Amino acid sequence: MTLLLAGDIGGTKTILRLVKAPADGDEVLHEETYPSQNYPDLVPIVQEFLAGREAKPEKACFAIAGPVVNNRAKLTNLPWLLDNKRLETEMEIGQVSLINDFAAIGYGVLGLKSSDIDTLQAGERDTEAPIAVIGAGTGLGEAFLINQGSNHRIFATEGGHADFAPRNESEFQLLKYLEKKYDVGRISVERVISGPGIVAINQFLRKHPQEITSAPEIQDAVRKEESEGEEKKVDPADIAKAATEKRDMLSERTMKMFIEAYGAEAGNLALKLLPYGGLYIAGGIAAKNHQLLESEGFMQAFTDKGRVSNLLEKVPVHIVLNQQVGLIGAAICAAQL
Image 1: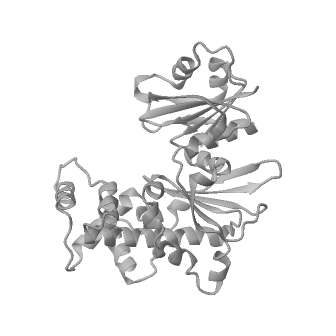
Image 2: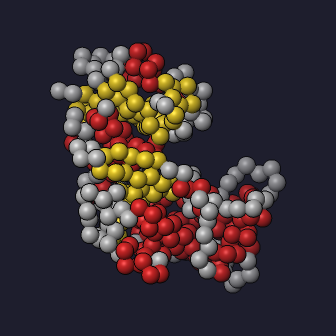
Image 3: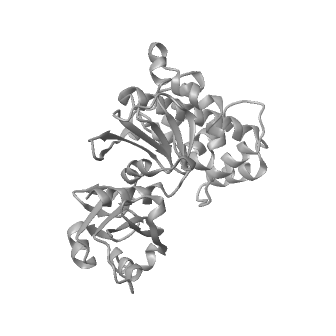
């Protein structure tokens, strides 16, 4: 029996999962969550997790919330410097790999069950074609996978930093607003399609003349955020919740604008890759608000590509509902070492 160790390493928490190869959801043997800031390094967490177990993992993969270069990572919100060779020695694990957390999501889509996804468009799946992954959260991640026969290779990108491309007058006005707000000459797409982007769209709509009122708690949060020195921030989840419950017209307009921009960018990614293996929408925003993404706006914007719109009608499009997709991916990556 080959044991694999998968980890999701973040500044707030570290989740470890012990699985039996082949790495899929039915093979989970043990899982624990640890507060990352209570430990000086990843090694003592793993040692605590494996304490008392006779069988040790042969391979491990850790998904890191931050950049990973040549299997080395310095976490953004922790004083941890991780190196796979050091970890192999100190953890006594034969092979250790460090990958970016969004790369882990890319691997994870390969291990999802039908119950883990919500299909927006069935399309015409081609198992030999590329797979695309896009996910909005704190920022916007984009990646793709290429079939290499016995496994897939994932390629991370910086697509979230591409230029935001307005498609109508409202979005042009939003672009101008964001340029002024951030005092910059260009706006990246993740300034719009992300949690902070939801808040920025809400503020933009609030500042433009219209006969729309907003829920009192969101009004208060916005006023506090815009007050100099105030630490409390508007929570994009509050805006999304108000929109879902249809109790705040401004929040509804905010999420409509956000979702249409999200669909358009997913369509842009699909045009560049033609991912007939599937396009997967990951990240907490999609998983928690999949009912909103099921609205007509997302898929209309996705396929609205002029003369080549028909090409995107063949792309399978899925929302990833399983928020542990990164752990699944880390296990799959470990199995491929």
